[in-house]
Length: 202
Image (cartoon, rainbow, N blue to C red):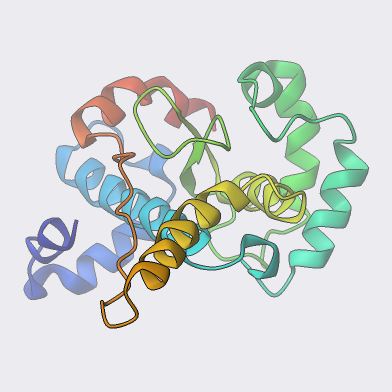
């Protein structure tokens, strides 16, 4: 991922920053815009998964408005399943009508609140083509906050902590190694093809 980002080049840094502040729906079919947008989206997903794998998710703060976002999410979506997200609960016309006022409450508060963001469908798994859906940034934050506070992301942190503990017990002199995550982020090619329609519907 770092190689992909560096390939944009320093001379294009300012232009890239301006482009990435735009909504993905404004990019049309321009491959350059799509590449830059996908790069930012992939990086955000990668960093988030590294966080919940390296730190206790229940103690993570995603924004300075976490408490407000979580309270509002519970009020708007009492029966929303966050463990395994149903696409219908995000993408249907009825769902969009329910999400719209929630999302707009955080306009001007949460940076890039309506930016397309990759969400894991099943919270017990990592990122993959089959376990990815495109949502807005504020939807992502609300759902991942709920997962963190309800202990649904703990499995990723514990999967890394437990092997490290065993290695310490076996040899105090050995450097503790943390198992590398096997769940690969979806490829850009598959992501762009799979979520082409989702970008328009977010």
